[in-house]
Length: 634
Image (cartoon, rainbow, N blue to C red):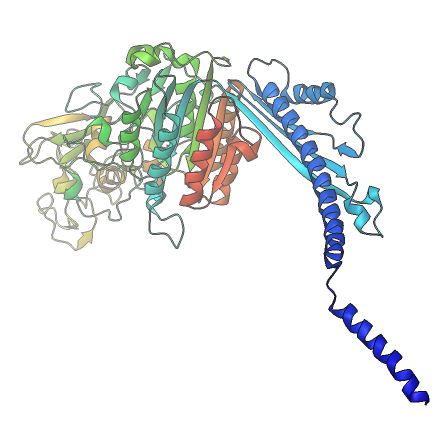
């Protein structure tokens, strides 16, 4: 009875539960409830994000306006002060709850012809909603924050640029061990791209660019040489002060390095066209190869060709290109740069500064195209921006040069016109170590010439090195003819046959006394020392160093001195309103240091350590962009 009474009730409950489980009515309400909660969350996040973005945009706009105002060349006050004042007057953030702004960090570069202002700041927006979704986070501890950067630069539209470019021998090397492209090729490409950017739109001819290729020296066109009061100008084929064809290097006095300009009237000595670096190892054998053929130049100047060559044109060699507003001559000059020689950064920089200084204006007026007439503008002028790009891949290396006293003037050396061979005259009281005692004045071992007292000794003043035999038999009998002894042979002994009373010999033809500049045209310094002096046996000529130091010395004395001169000249240029961008291209540490020290400040804007060709190209591109007119750059 009990079971039968309960069964209908259980069935009714079961059926009700089943109907409830199968009933879909009200499902959308659950979905809408969950969706609504999600929408509230996303909407709250969006509100917080929009509040932050609005605050960030307000800060960015304020900073952009402040940077542009402070970077204007019309401003006379410091850019940092102007930018800070702009912020103070704007009162950014005041009256706005839940938003805070950091104090701006302003960096300003104020140069003649260029101003750059960089501003950094951050904004923090406290969240209304986002923090509520995390029960452990209070509203003040929940925020969005971001940093903002703005930079503005203005450069004047008139630019005077000098590319001072290293063309030393190491520029033939690849920039890195993994590269097959030479540094000089990379330089050509990077410099060309720089010119393309700068000269993209210069229809008004406002931008002039010059090129100063440098090694140990800087070779200039003869027309530019004639603008200076040069001394020690070489003779050529017997014509005094004719100059050496296509080679014009000046030794600018070190006293001028403290100035950016150079006087066009003060005397400046020419560098001798000479090979003072290569050495001859033998002191006994006559070197016919150097007797008649003009020398191939070493690093004393920047041309590498025989002096008799007539195939060169100014565009083919590493000469200075005076500033021009025409694009193609600049590209042609860059495309023809070739590498050789040692590194004298200070010399290259000296030419770059003097050609941008106001004192060079007569040069532009005389030699320049119409668009550069009246340039360079006055130093520290607000009308023109003056820029030097100084690039090197090395460091200072010492190199010899000919002393002023032996650059020009009659020498004691003679040359035969037919055989191209040489003689030297030794006289009492003669200059250039020619006043020593000649061998053959007596019969003792110290005064004789291999045992002979030379006949007509007072007249026999000319030593002819190619007549001297390598070995000479000594005189042992009174009947031994002069120069034909009956004794033992002695290597390098005095040879009576090499001493004559006239500067002529068989096959010499007409003999001409040479100017010192012509001596160095035909003979290496080491040849003159060993063959004409040391082999003569004249007293005082027996030591190579003594004789060599009579004629040559180290140009600019030492690496330390060159570093000092470079730094001195860079300081003078910066004081004159010239901006200096420095590029060390895969350079050693010392090279990096001197280029960094030379560059304008701040270093992060003006100095580039380009370790490979890609970074070199980037450096030139950044510089090109940097010297454009007023714009926001960040």
